[in-house]
Length: 565
Image 1 (tube, helix red, strand yellow):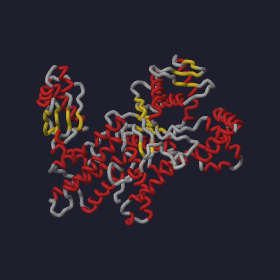
Image 2 (cartoon, one colour):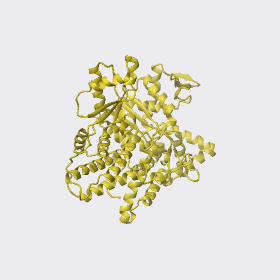
Image 3 (cartoon, one colour):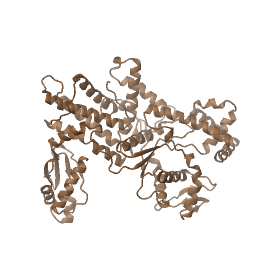
Image 4 (cartoon, helix red, strand yellow):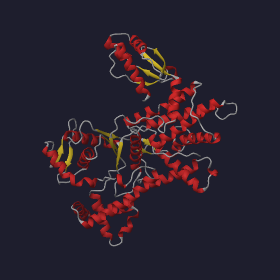
């Protein structure tokens, strides 16, 4: 059971015993050590209702607390705060139990669900660029987290593989003639050349539109050429995903085109339910509180993203059995998803027991606060950015001379890719993200490299000891008590991060843990000859459990760790 859950349960029992009408108690972590470990601030809101002094309410709750091993001290402070200090004996016992558990004592969801995580979603006509980075990193970390906590996770890569641009590309490929398929080695350049022809030549543009109709009508030649684009694009995506260490494969791809046959049925169904209206020749749904309607079908009969998104929701609920659908898409799409979710509810595609959430994130900016671009203002290819991360990591590693070339490449890849991912995940996803090589590869502050060195240092301690660690814990001072508590808060942190879809909750915890361990290590010697064996065993358990916690949490975030650095 999570610590907060247990404390809330004890306070709820105390309220019932004292006859205090407390609906849902919520403890919070104390802001300062002098305020204990946790605080309950619920007495003050009750004061007006009960017409009592909040300190009297707090006193009644404290006196009614049931006997328990968890709370060592409950004190009333200020106008009615209850400061709770946990028992060192309970912390030691729980830490020993966590150390014997492969999952470090972290329980799974009591009621696991099928969760669909929609992320990455590149367009198949181009190479992946930095605009796909945040969705891919954030989405993959959340999918890992949900799976660890027991949900059945279905990763969905809703790639853009349909529409006018493909008519343009097919027309250009046809124009180049026999053997033109070889020109697809650089999709970005091929796309630029085709777009230039489309913009400059009206006849070519008309031909491109004809190819779109042929493609959507199932023309064999067009489909063959279209499949070449998709295959080439997916191969490039797989290269990026492999380098990024993310868990997306071709099996996770369910593209826009997969819903193509369902779109007419969506329109007919919305019409039958009386939701569709005519607006300037288009078929739309008006959503309460929104100035503009959601367009379902254009006046020329074409469909939009909204139509496909509604078909996807219906499929994910009815076929996949999803109870939570998380769309990891940038914040600029907030209005679109708000309307799509509303229409999905109105149409009955997503009942109220299905959670639809837009996991939004801010823009990726350079150090000057502008959108992240190449020096000439072009789009940064994602594969090139990742290759640069590996090269920069080589410079950041302080013990380069200790490794041969092959080892150095492996270490630099883990450090470089980990730095890119951690830097993104360490900020609140809703904020704009400043991409800064110097910061992300720094040894100071909340960075991946700081975590890597903390983990590697502990592994070095364990190697030097070389013996068996018995797993016994004794808490001898306040620093050890704080470290034990921090280690045992992992479960609360992971469940909170899953509930709110906030990976930065985990990175903030990791930074606090690594910093606290460093203080512990400086003040509480482990291998020094004058340390008694029983005390050494306890401190080795602290070190080992810290390392395992760092590793577990980083792996959930999709970041590999190194035993030596």
